[in-house]
Image 1 (tube, rainbow over the protein chains, first blue to last red):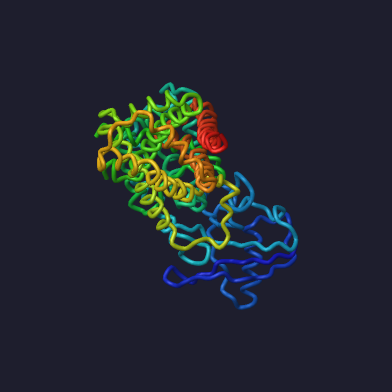
Image 2 (image 1 turned 135 degrees about the horizontal axis):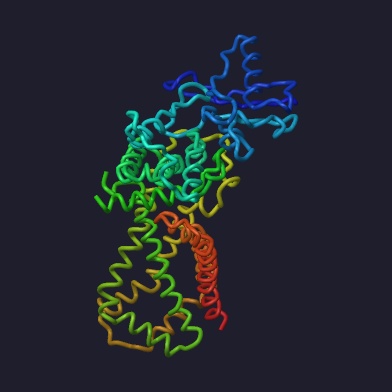
Length: 248
Length: 217
């Protein structure tokens, strides 16, 4: 496959970026998107051009590091996959592919396609945990009976890898799907219920302070989420937040 | 951060004011529908609504507040949302993952706001002038004629029809969305969405048919 790539190049967070166009030939349809980017970078380096910076780690769709906005969609045209699991067979020979970083005020560009998603870390640190005593006499989690329905929903919420596709794809750059998944995975389980009120208040407060937009329920986040996190989590978080706020 | 200052609090306020306006719309539609079946009944109900002190001095101010709140909050949220992404994408395929209605609530909202301006000019301002400025004598039979008079002009009927198409588009996303915002996403969601979709089509269409009925009669 021969492709034309239009890629956002930005030397650093202080400098203005722009789209640069590169040609790449002999791309195998079996390559992953990131492998194609590796080939491009080798080509650029051989030409003395600075390679394109992009985030990646596991390349197995589980770490949440890869973060490209490909042809107008977070993680590209495929569904329920991250960029590393997107394959070049999804494109056609002669295609022009536009690649941009995940854009949000709360996700400033570090360089090229790499963005700073530490806002998610700060939200998580604000309450996305259970303060369980693990000093040696901790009760076995399986000793607490949990409704299978709730356990499944908590697990589904916990599959969120925090990649930020929800923010990137939302027209308002809202982080509600991410935060609601983190709130839900604990709120549904007895271990998490103890601190549920403080958790949701603190996490939403941090989310607002980071400068994410407001959710308008377009549902784009759910469609583009590589893990299929449901909008049901947002409704649950709204309920949790309302009850926690009114309780005081 | 207080509930009212938080993003969720503002969204919930937006949703509740929207549900309130849907209730008002239902009531308004019911009264308009009477005009098709009975001139005298329409006049009676309109006269009651226009002169009952509870409706006039308690419900009407609440309604005006609800309308203003919904619009002002809509613009505030839109402004905040536009600030949350300083650099736009050069390619953004919003239609691949969200409906036009959900992505363009501000556009449908502005059309509805413009229509409300015309509607106030047509009905509310003359009504206030009649009752509280000129203080003309009560006439319980004037309402039907006033209504029919407004639907004589084809241009005005055209604007009316266009506005209600946008109202339908606004409701098609907003009505069901307000339940999600207040935390209702459960086994009843499918029924809520079906009802909301039906309401969003039937009620605006009903308003349009009533206008066309009087225009063509």
